Amino acid sequence: MKRYSEYKDSGVKWIGEIPGHWKSVPFRRIAKVQCNLVHPFENLEMLQISPDSIEKDSGKIIKIKTVAEANIDSDNHRFYKGQILYSKIRPLLNKVTIAPEDGLCSADMYPISTEEKTEFIKYYMLSKAFLSSVKNIVADRVKMPKINQDELKETRFVIPPLPEQEAIVTYLDSKVAKIDEYISIAEKKIAALEELKQTIIAEAVTRGIHKDVPMKDSGVKWIGMIPEHWKIEPFGRHFSYGKGLPITKADLTTEGVAVISYGQIHSKRNIGTTMDDSLVRYVNHKYLGTSPQCLLNKNDFVFADTSEDIEGCGNFAFNDRNESIFAGYHTIIVRPKDILQPKYYAYLFQSKKWKSQVQTLVNGVKVFSISRGILKKASLLIPTYAEQQEIVSYLDSKVASINQLCQAERSQIEKLKEYKQRLISDVVTGKVKVMND
Image 1 (cartoon, rainbow, N blue to C red):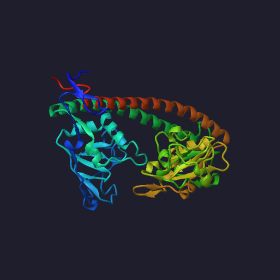
Image 2: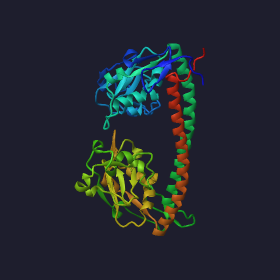
Image 3: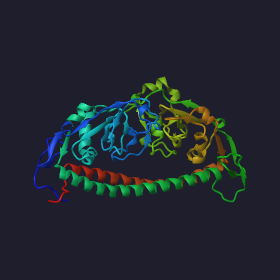
């Protein structure tokens, strides 16, 4: 790719050299944060954007809600179409977008106006160069990193002349759209594979793997027809309950005793049949003495007791490890009493049919709550022990193959995202020339 004929030192270590005619200036020279707090009740039909509305590293708005739908009851910033919206909390997630219309944003965001090309500034804020500046600012802020206005004002931006900004935006719009299209194709493949996995699991745990057995009406709406010799029994007959640690995210440490909390239970990395290392966080060893009842046994289940959406109600993790792991905040420990093949239940609890029992009983507006009482009302579908063994072996094989295909697609997505961010950084800092002479 083409480079510029002359470069100079930008004065910023992680940016390096920039084209000789470009400027390296603090944010305050090219943009302004325009805070304008207003009461939400006067703007109920307007668009509302929070940090959770924006996909990290992409600039895409992924959740569209009005102020009324978001149930906002505290003052928000008024923003206007075309302004940049930037999340000041957890800034390493790089949540920045351009407002598609007038609306309100949470006080955790900055509405930004600029006389430069807005789309160029957005791309610059999505670049590794800007992210490196932010990392340098918040490096020591572990619990809840935040970038304040004064710090943002002094963050250096690399600014080319306006015609080059426009050429860069045109170039990146085209390239990023193609990369995003490839990412979308891979995501659709994953969604189709996950749907296939759900279908295979649901069929096995509600009808078995032998197609020639006599069937009967279960008498339970969510189940339908089941093998004639299978039983339906109350959840509470086979499980006891416990509580997770009375902690918050602030109590997590970088090392200590392993803990799994509701955030990790809802993670896409949680496949439901094994305790993946990526799900584990840590707490102080003192809890071994003060809260031993919150430790998980091998083959325990740990359910999230809250969810931000109805689909997450009934999400759980399965502990298949022989080591000290705590159930963390917002969790319910579900411990088998007399179950010989707990992994069968790990598959059963994953099925949409089983989770539908929980989802019909929860209540909430912004957050849905799951209680022990709700779990106790659920029913269990119980094949013979021999069939449970067969179902687990069958599903282990089928699910492993599908997970492998999904992982290959996810790896491809990560490579595409890394390439996109590298391309954006190279172009907005002038390492690559896209404008014709």
